[in-house]
Image (cartoon, rainbow, N blue to C red; front, side, top):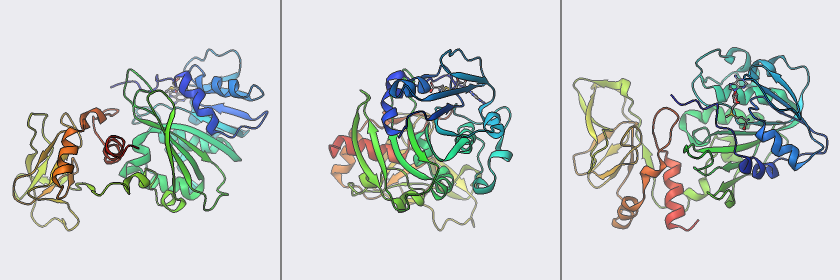
Length: 360
Ligand SMILES: C[S@@+](CC[C@H](N)C(=O)[O-])C[C@H]1O[C@@H](n2cnc3c(N)ncnc32)[C@H](O)[C@@H]1O
């Protein structure tokens, strides 16, 4: 498995993110996974009056700011002082050593149930802030648009003000393709109806477009580009039958399969009698897209009888000829990313479609 703790923020990206943080002179700035101090360095360069503090579990070699060698979560839980600004590009991934969930996911965060280190670091950072403090944190895009993070997004937006999202380009951590966004969160929820601004950074690290996400959408956990979605006249549905419903015999369901050319979904079975009332059904003429595994991004025009699809597939219902052609021409496989499992997301397909055909 890749070690995602070593993807230091490239200095150019760190520098270009600083303008999204409202620094005041002499603010105290902390990074509890500071690494070589790239984010702190960008902040200090942006405003030399800032007082910077770095924490890292590994040896730290920064001589221009005060540093502490410690687990960032432990540091946050034991900290006596609070900071005005927190900057974070934490490690990503499932927790393999000590979890601090029981101490971090309490009070207003009690509904959070996650075994990922970046989520523990997110809450640790929020704990470290003064009441009017600001956090800039880099997280995987799945945190912004993944269905499984919706509840956490709701909890965050119910308690804080999600001010800005900056989608970073896939080459941000080149040569790896790690799809991430920087999120600016104000600890105090003082702007009741203020929209969140969503920016996209292009591969040259310039901001290529921006739009607003309504406060109501943010509150509902819809943090991805609803506005762009309104510009397309098709909907991508993700299946919702999971592999733990499989059985040896029963009702046929379509599932992902290995990469092949042309690609076709495979066949599985689920027990009769399971609740499938909200399940997605593929019908002749629908476009099926593999979402996960070696075939992520492969697609086919379905020719068979109506069948349920699993959560490893996505579906576009009744596409017209032009949409089929457009989709077939898109390089969906270029969207494949993933910390441990290769996958593509619905919002990445919308983004690619819009940037290719709607000139956004
Ligand atoms: C992705 S790097 C980012 C470093 C720096 N913030 C930047 O943006 O360049 C993550 C850093 O987190 C550190 N780290 C990993 N686990 C940690 C933990 N539990 N507590 C504190 N630091 C940790 C790693 O040593 C690494 O330096």
